[in-house]
Image (cartoon, rainbow over all chains, first blue to last red; front, side):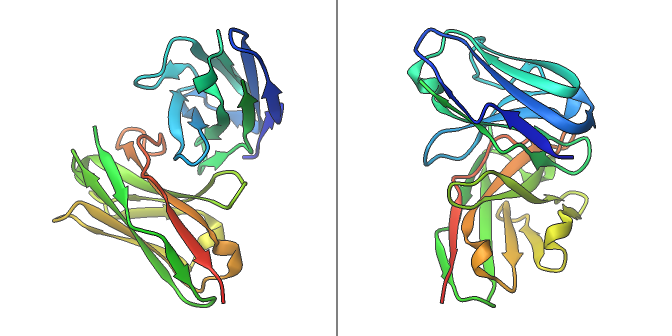
Length: 105
Length: 120
């Protein structure tokens, strides 16, 4: 399953909101859709799993939604620490990742 | 919470092999699956395979068939990933990550990464 993320880059100001999109080439069970955050020079970190469940330690400014082929990661009230590349992952079949969306604050 | 510590950077010749280790502390591998994900410089994430030590089951991406293997030392809570017949395209940071047995591909946490450089 190919995951296509959009946009490639988001440039936003602190306090604004971000909407990241992940579209799958075929339907994905939402239980098997996750999002990761990767800051420069760091390993990825799980942000969201099951499409809409926040991982441990992730603030409630982050939310996930979607079903079928279309999934969204939303970030409210952006902070500078949210600057990162965000990847979606599906594992309804063997795991694949999207190409990432870079969020610049 | 499990913490993963990976072995240090490696420089390898084309055609050789590399073995990367991933040691868990704060938990036992018997309760987790271990996945390997790599990332070439400036590129995205590529899943390589997932090993479930308690079942001895190894699932890997077709792309790496015949080139990648994994072993585990349960006495030291260490998993090893070996990649053979290296080419320059294998130059990347290699990450290990755990997933619970009920959701093995939900990757959390990750190791710090091991840079493997393949160069003559």
